Length: 292
Picture (cartoon, rainbow, N blue to C red):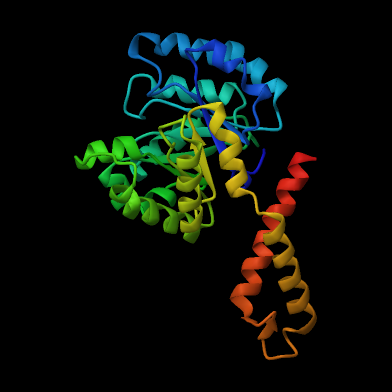
């Protein structure tokens, strides 16, 4: 299974739209989220699942280098169990679970355990999109060992707390930070909500830089045109990589000799700065390996 923590862009694709599914192999996203939930109207739910199990197999076979997830319907809906079993049958990497709390994750985990083949890896990505979900995020990410990341959902969250969704995003800043800190404490992926205006690449870039600075590891996309912007922001620049290499090399050659503090170009570098540079290089090298 591909490493979700190394994914920058997650493209949502509605399973009731085969024309969009056909384009997946040619996209540059790191991960695909086949959607059976919000983008699929009630009357199309069963057909969307059939499309997933039919045409979806061909997509997964053609683009195996990508991570494949399925956003299933809420675990207490009449569709959830069949959705989860379909995701397992597809040999997807896991599911995105809407309206998540610890109870929902535990219920989904039980269905998965009764469905997967022995040894099959399968992950759960809780979608944090309610006030209760934000308030209980730590319990949720610890509800199952299958939880390898969490995604924030701004639209349902702002609806739930009854505030207007704005371009500035101030109303979701606390929720984003709280989810990210929980994910970082658990050492799992922290995935951001989509940027709604897919015709505003500058706004998308600014929004993505903002969540990257919070510590998020990736962002969901609702249109293929958003993928390259998100990938670019989450990919270290050559300048950042060069700087990190210099810090790591100098530290490993001289850090212990100088009581754990060195000076590079007038800047004091201690162990946390060294470790941050080392983490950046490790992630950069992993991404290069995946591309190759």
